[in-house]
Length: 324
Image (cartoon, rainbow, N blue to C red):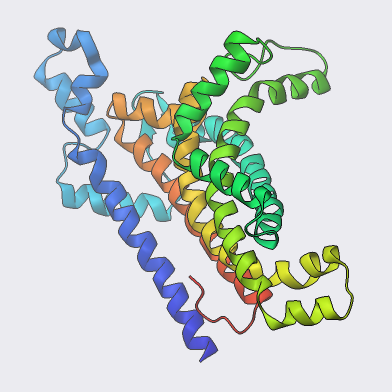
C-alpha cells in the first residue's frame, strides 16, 4: 500500500510538470504581436522580408507549432533553454544573473513568515478568545486582504520617502572594497521588500496555525499533560506544536507559489533586478525562450517545495500517506 501511494505521488508530480510545462510552451505563443517585429522596434521599416525570415529562422519561429513543441521538449531534456532575443545571450545565463536576487528575497521571507506564524499563531490559539487572539486575528485578516505591492508601496512611502530610513529601491548604494560593507548595504536595501512580503505571507499561515492550535488545545492529551503539571512552554513546544503544525506545512507548500508571484511584483516596486524584472521585460519584448525559461524555473521550484512538504508530512506523522 505504501509503495502504491509513493508511485501515485511520483506519477502525479510528473503529470503536473508535463501539463504545466506544456502550458508554459503555449502561453507565450498566444500573446498578440510578432516577436521579431517587436524586437526590431522602430528599425522595422528598413528591414526587408528576407531579413525578417532570417530572424524567424534563427529563433525557430518559422517552423510549425508541432515542430517547435518537439524541439522545446528536446531542449529541456538537454538542459538547453534557448537564446534570449532581448538580452542576446543564452537564457540560462540570463536567468542565472537574476535568480540569485529573487532567492535572496524569497528565502528570508519563507523563514521569517513561517517562524512568526508558528509562534504567534500558537499563542493566539492557546489564548483563544483573549484580547491577544482578537488583535492577532484582526491584524492578520487586514494584511491578508491587502495585495503585496500595496504593502510594499505603503512601506516605501513611510519608511523610505517620508522618514528616509531606507533607500527607495535598488540593490546597493555603490561598490566598496569591504565585503562586509557590501553585504550590510545589500541587507539594508532588501529590508523593506522582505518586510512587505513577510507581512503578507505571515497572515494566512498565522490564521491556519491559530485555528489548528485552538483545536488541539481541546484534545485529551493536552488535558493530561496539564494535569501532570507540565509547564505551558513544554506543553506548547513538545506536545501541541507537533500536531498543530501539520496544516501549516500543507499551507506553506501551497503558499510558496503565492509568495513567488508576490515577490515578482514587489521586485518591480523596489527596482530589484530579479526574476520579476526578467519576466516583465520578456513579456514586453515577446521573448519566448526567456519567458519559458523563467516559468520553467519557477514551476520546478514550487513543485520541489510541495514534494519536500510531502516528505516532511510523512516524517512528522507516518500515519499520513497522502497529505497533499
